[in-house]
Image 1 (cartoon, rainbow, N blue to C red):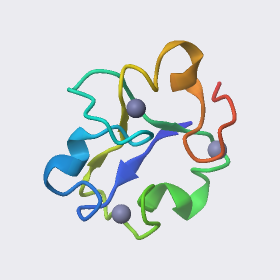
Image 2 (image 1 turned 45 degrees about the horizontal axis):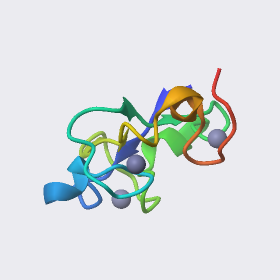
Image 3 (image 1 turned 90 degrees about the horizontal axis):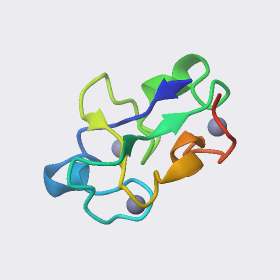
Image 4 (image 1 turned 90 degrees about the vertical axis):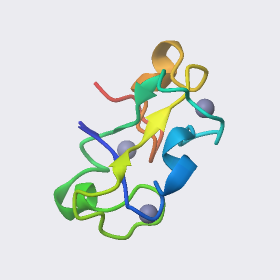
Length: 85
Ligand SMILES: [Zn+2]
Ligand SMILES: [Zn+2]
Ligand SMILES: [Zn+2]
């Protein structure tokens, strides 16, 4: 399990303040978007969740709003939708 990162381009300006899932502002609440071990395997964790380019550990962590991370929804892989344990 890993948290997912967006590249500088995909987190530019107010984009980092928007929910990765629905695009609404998350207001700093909600949860960090999770990816399962399969979707973060090897070099996949080094790639931007939004566009697939390498993020080089810059940019910012992808975040979900209160609504999209409510209950068990926040525990699902944002890439494949599988439950992350
Ligand atoms: Zn959302
Ligand atoms: Zn990107
Ligand atoms: Zn996954």
